[in-house]
Image (cartoon, rainbow, N blue to C red; front, side):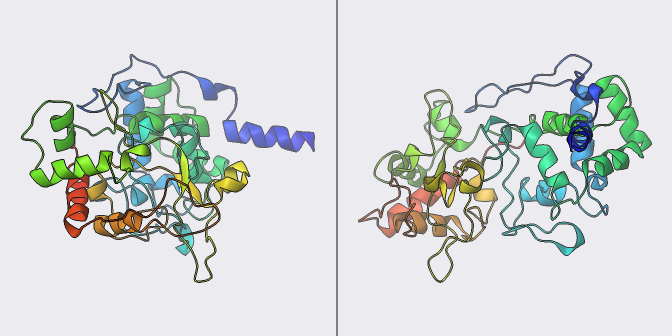
Length: 332
């Protein structure tokens, strides 16, 4: 069976040229107010190739979907449906998160199974429900397009198409998709005391204080990613019998406490990306706030940080929603 393993690995990584560096000088992406420096800048040609691939249906086995089908520009690089349709009538089982600011995440996917944007980029292409291609099939589809070969040559120095090159180019484009300079950023990091409404200021105080949101949705001294890069069980996705319908991080780690745990989502631009949670089960920010105030849903692995928040008035809940709405940044 050793020959089969070798052949499989060769197809997946795409031969000896797959690790060739991009050609050209990196073009740094300017970090907007409230965000840290953007890592791993890529040359302009690599970014252009990645953008073309991101919007190309050639990456799906039947030419029906692209990365942008689930991460739609008009939907703020997310999807307004609880789960996204894929090829051949298939339907995913998790909500598509926005790609804005994904470069700052320490792991990708709700369960954190990919450790980089490059590793994430190939996942949907090779997923039977999402884009349905094999590695060799995706390579052949891209190789058949003269414009793609030209862009590949500009980015890498030759026209060779491999899965590694496809994934790295898509990641190069995604690394440029950053949004900050929100009213929150201007208020906290820019010193503009008029940037937040009175309601949003009260919401910020609650967020940092008795609502305990900032424990997981972190706010730093100089910037804020609103995520702790950890995995938490909130009790989201329970069936009528009280059982978890998706084991989440447990499928990756095999650790009992990770059952039903999912990556902390950044709250930046959250007002634009309903529905919420990994299964898209909460339709509005008000529902999200009410869910947390209620202490989530009880189950054996419920994170100890999740507990009912007593004495929360209707006004306080509205103030928290106003604060979350203040996290919408400028579109570059």
